[in-house]
Image (cartoon, rainbow, N blue to C red; front, side, top):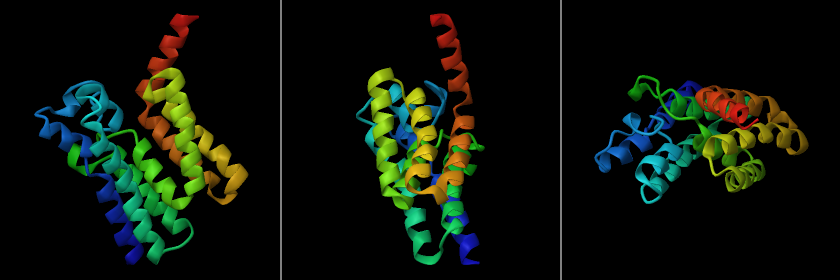
Length: 188
């Protein structure tokens, strides 16, 4: 029963729409501006850097908290399922008709608890990608697919979990991927 409760708790934590909440504080429905996404990148795009730290910390925190709690009561794959529930909550929030964010910051939050080394390296890869591309989507996609490779080297038991998480986040980025392909085709 505790396992089920923690899964539901993680999903509901993940569903807290910090981008939507911060947008409302600024008098803007974030889902009607920019990409329409509730995540950090769209908040930066629409509201600027001043509004975005709350969203970033909130989105990371809603991944951290459930996994920290789950580690107190669960073990092994059960913790990973709780982590997945938090990320799924961000991508498919019940409060917003299941139209949420991309899961990157929440995924970072769960990863920092599960494996701080992998989380830190993933963040570093994202920042290096952002320095090169100046766009969040390609930087995020590169980082999320590097994480399973890092797991092979450092934490092999978590590799399949991170392949699943990367697949879920890639699905959430499907429109961004189409845009990247179009831009690449035009550049050729």
